[in-house]
Picture (tube, rainbow, N blue to C red):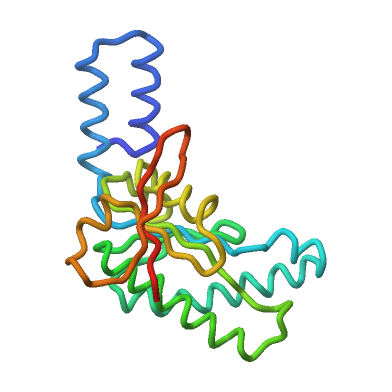
Length: 201
């Protein structure tokens, strides 16, 4: 069977040659059949990272990333998930459910709080986290693409503040009522109003 890159190339070529809609749908169906996954997506961003790096330098930058890696590696496995990739001060993970993703996010914050108690303020690690649930394309377990990845990234990187966990309303609907305490808030995303839940922990 064709690889992900080959299928994307076929789709691009078909578009460029104005192939029929059926041809495009056939290639797209092959992509989703081979690489499609439906899970929770969690995106973590280290808060205030650029400012701290400018102040303390690249070695401090690497040290902070190392501490973040240590904080997330064991809890993600305990929650049945896996880390898809690290990119600079960001971490991207997939988990079997919204509930597992929230438990993981909460545990990360508790671990970091404990770690921060043992270091001076300039070494403290604070993170912002976004969570969504849905279908995405998982490529060799090292990268992923799709609407839930985009939305979790928007929440974690752009909207959540330090120590905040934001979950989309659609993802939160998959969690048993009363399982987590949260505030419902509204944000503007690309000109659209989006309802999300800020988890209390």
